[in-house]
Image (tube, rainbow, N blue to C red; front, side, top):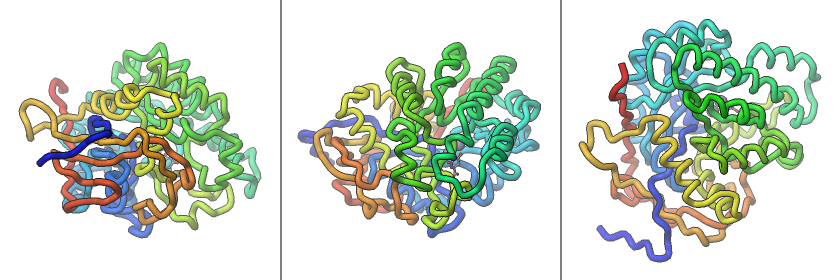
Length: 401
Ligand code: DOR
Ligand code: ZN
Ligand code: ZN
């Protein structure tokens, strides 16, 4: 097969390491089929799926069930997170060796029920059982609950960033860095959102890797709350310009390893609820590459740096491999882009059943032209081709106990 890439730029397959596909769940909001269709339309060849589904992925049974459910339903490759609870650390310490597991995810804050692991003793136990890098949602739950009491319901959506203030995230990150130092366990802090954390973590680069979100690199408050209302509400929140500037400085000075979308679909009805009942989370897997290409075209980062943060970084941080498939070399996964193509993101382009994007009307220079997975063209010029033949992604656990 000959693939004509005249006037196009061929990149390694781009990875979205932070996606909530929510399947099994509410098919009116998101599905494996719709979410991964959006991914390949947006130039993503592999994504990592978060475990906080209706039945969270807390055990071997749930993991196996999810792998079965994905079969024939995914357009791109999908790695799977495991969800930590206060009681499953021994099981997860073994289960993290399963080849399709990208990492264990721990919610230090902003989670409900059994997925909330808010005390240092439980986190330390999780860090001592197992060996692979652990991913964290870093917000201090006690502080979040105390802050919440200071606000009256029904306020403007921008109050969300005051409730989940800088200290909520910074306190969580200080606690995690100390625990990583004490146990020697490598950790990955997802969606770092404050200037304070980025500066503090400079002394922990030997153990701590970081992710920034495209949302935090594209929007800032209070403006985004004025234009988007509940459709800008997420955790950790979109903050003011100072943090946006610090995030871009971190992209350039090397303090960041990965960029993700935190694609977290909710129904329109749930996003339109008055604050603070608004569901937190924005869609993004389909718009991640176009928006980042636009940042490249506007000179905020180089295309090389974008590829480091969206292919090399996630592969390194999570240990993405071709385990069990090819002994030497890599799958022929490519994202082919047209760096000069100008196009506006429109709501009706979105494949997720929830059908909305916070980037509606956002004008991009740079657009994915083809998504190639294992040498097969899965998307060309907005057309999704073939059948959903994505696979569970493979991770190398070589050298781990
Ligand atoms: O805004 C968020 N939405 N933050 C999270 O950590 C979870 C996510 C979701 O699942 O909706
Ligand atoms: Zn999170
Ligand atoms: Zn998330």
